[in-house]
Length: 178
Image (tube, rainbow, N blue to C red):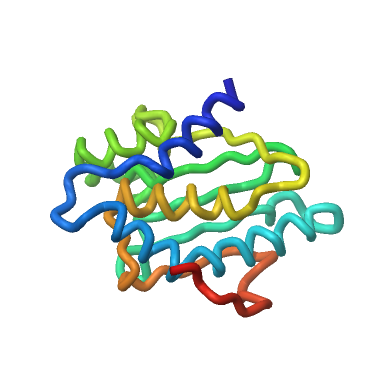
C-alpha cells in the first residue's frame, strides 16, 4: 500500500493540474526550478543527521511567507519511511477555539489525486511515503513542491520559507533546473 502510494505520487508529478488559468506544467516547472535545490539540500541534511539527532527534529516544513498556515511538512519516521502532511486549516486556531478555515474542494481534490487522505475532520491531510535506499530525495522534494503547487497554488514568484531544525539554511549552492 505504501509503495503504491509512492508510485501514485511519482506518476502524478507528470500529470497536469486543473483549475488554474496558467499552464500548469509551465508553472510547476518554474516552481521546481526556483525551489527544488533548497528542498533537496534540507532533506539531505536531515537524512545525514538522523543517526546522531533527536527524532523530533527529522522534519522539514515548507510554507508561504505571506501565509504560514498553508504548508507541507514531511518527517522521516525512519530512514525508509516518511509521513507528509498538507495543511488543512484544522490547526489554524488553538484547540479551544472553533475551526474557521477549510481548504476549497478543488484543493482537497488535488491533494487526493496526489495520494493524500482527504479527511480533515481530525487533523491535516496525510500520506506515508517509502524512502528508497539510497534515498531519492529529489523525488521527495518534487512531491513537496507539487503538493504546494496543486493544493495551494504555489508559483515560482511566491516566497517560500523553511522550518527544519537540522537544516535551517541551505549549505550548498545549486544551479536550478530550468
